[in-house]
Amino acid sequence: MTYRLGIDLGGTSAKMAVVNSKNQIMREGSVQTSDNPSPSKLVQQLARVGKLLMKGYSVKNVGVGVAGDIDFDNGIIRFSPNLHWKRVPLKKLMIKAFHRQVVVDNDANVTAWGIYKTQAPPKTKHVIVVTLGTGVGGGIILDGKLYRGATGTAGEIGHLIMKEDGRKCNCGDAGCLETYSGGFHVTKAVRKDLEKGQKSRLRTLFDRDPDQISPYAISQAAKQGDRYALGVWNGIGHHLGLALGNLIYVFNPQMIFIAGGVAQAGSLILKPLWGTLKKRSFPVPIHAVKIRIAKNAAHMGVIGASLL
Image 1 (tube, one colour):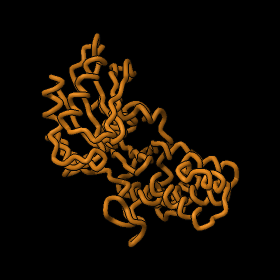
Image 2 (tube, rainbow, N blue to C red):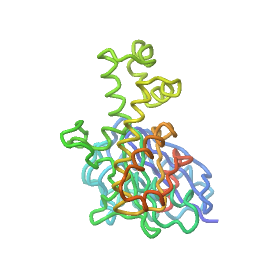
Image 3 (cartoon, rainbow, N blue to C red):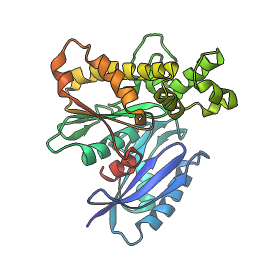
Image 4 (cartoon, helix red, strand yellow):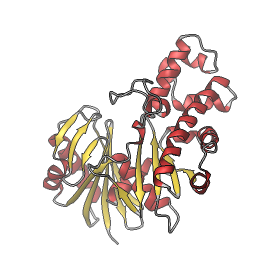
């Protein structure tokens, strides 16, 4: 049996796992990244933990998913806002530290690839994956291959413009999908509403500690029938439906998977999402697509990275 090492490198931690040829995690670990280590220092830490994880397994390949703008062909991180890195030759550093073949890609791409390879039914070749977490990302699979585009930046679904001069996005633009369906911006908007006196079951939680207002808390309030919280999820699903409708028209996928922490709200998102999609005037591709909440999304990053 063959084994691979997958690394999901984020702004808080780097998740690492040895994965076998059946895409099962054999051993896993992590390295903290929240203290903003230099690239060389972090790679040394990854190598130290990686060697412990790989002990006893014949691992020949290492895959790394990183949030940011990635030069896939050369394994260079052009810019990673979470890690505060620019022009980092990560592939070169990793090869030197691990003495193995290394592939570096965008984190949403590797999550999409992991979901596609482990959850898409046989003969499914056209898939879109949307990641709903703190922000919004995505990956596109066409003809069974991960589509990266001309510069490796395809799949930036979170920065589709939903409204000109809309909410300010961290990318510097305004009106991005991420500002209407991403956890950070949605939570920020809810806190502002509560500050202004919005009536909601969330009021008690907010008065106790505003930081306790989270997508999970908003989903719990919605499930208890809170009208305001239900309206928040309707907005998330509606804007996601607008974006997916455009993507369906362009790429005509067989399936769409929605992954990430915010996606765990399930039907709170899917119901308004489908309500928006069904209003589109070109019904054939809309009715043909299947939309699912991805399973085991927390491990799809390391599994997808190992499969690069």
